[in-house]
Length: 42
Image (cartoon, rainbow, N blue to C red; front, side):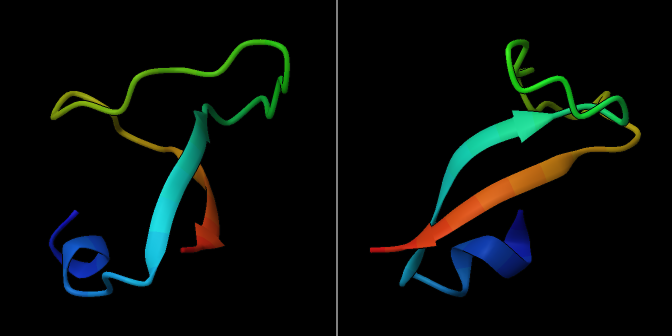
């Protein structure tokens, strides 16, 4: 999250677990071991 905050031109669109189920995004938190972030330019 520190890296993403240092890049203000990027925003998180969705977060997924290791199964990449696009119909089931997850909430990123401190207990997340692994996540795939979908980002876009602002």
